[in-house]
Image: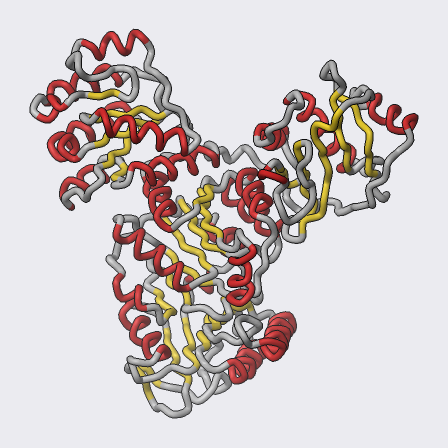
Length: 600
């Protein structure tokens, strides 16, 4: 779907425009003026002759041309009439800021308005951004269609990042946080209740923008999980990284998302599986999101499992080591040959193991760091180096920058306190990420690592997958043994070890659920103690291995993986099995007892 006319219109209409800059509709006029938009602007309000130097019109019908984009900022009842007239006039896009379309306390009346809105769009071909949004901005194209006050604090930084958000407020916080951290934003889109255009549509369109590298999403759920996955796959093929901060992971949070955007998303582990299979970077706080985007801006989307620490503080080395392990990363000991080479530069009261404790002497002896860099230039074990300590970074930031330029290594610096603007800018220009909090730094690096390398060749078809289900039943011994034998699963007796089944998820369709012994296998709980793993179907061998690795089971890993493959193959080929409860015999052989057939 092309959204080019939405992002780059030649003409814009402003329904409900006001000359009062203190009103929200007046702020829209002010910001559009300030943005420097070069197209034609038509305020629409029968009470004015002109607003902001632009001639004002009484209605959509009175406009001298059919505008590319119509901004609607009038009450809900009037908005429906305006949108109907716009659709009949041939307007293709509307930015509907008005609320009252099923969210909050609008109730049945709001639901009816939403139904009417969708009917208008289906009948006329009008596509709506919103409703219930603060607007959208194309910073690169000098187009501000918003009343959000954060737009007035734009620093002018541009840097290949887009923000797509269900919440104007949270999206504004993300924008401000990125700007404060010197990350430029090119596009900002509030999607709100997503009457016709959803986040997936924007991901798909923006994937074709060669100057974008990162798409940031704040979401409360998806309208169509398969549509979202197809769009995310398009982005991956185009070399774009998607970073997601998702709300509504708990039952209490879903009360809020239902009131806000009418979304009640499925379980958190289902979404986590979808994100993992799509190579999406999932973060869990605004701060972690900001750090992840800063890492991506310096090219961190590559192998980063093995982390090395350089510091002048032994205590900091110990503390950061714990941060690394908690983030799911590794802190490998350096090879003996590397340690021996480092010993020539580091005093005996330092350490060459990893963490590398340079000792306090480095603050006064630059040659220690320079010689250590010379030794580490040829190291192939460590994927990312974290340099901690303000004295080292303040004094030797030029050496750090030169080390990165000469070796291409991924280097992060952390100080715990802010650096001067000059030092930070010099490091950023040298592709060194400056991240104050080392704990957040490692959590963000862990999130990027879990998403895997950005590999456009790793792609799947996420179009609608066959949806079948049947009530589980226990087959007789003969039928069970025959089925298992055909798939190299030898029957026997023993205690249950795990269960593999396919269930229909309301957001993503068919998913493979793997439960350890004693864990619940259905929707809504993630199993006892979280012992449930998920794959969205279809699943690759790599996806299945990742799911099996997440299960703490007494079952042999290869047996569990094999059972997953059997179920996927049978489900996908419309054969006779959708679920299999797998048992272990005393000698470790795999056997089956409960089988659930599918409906043909």
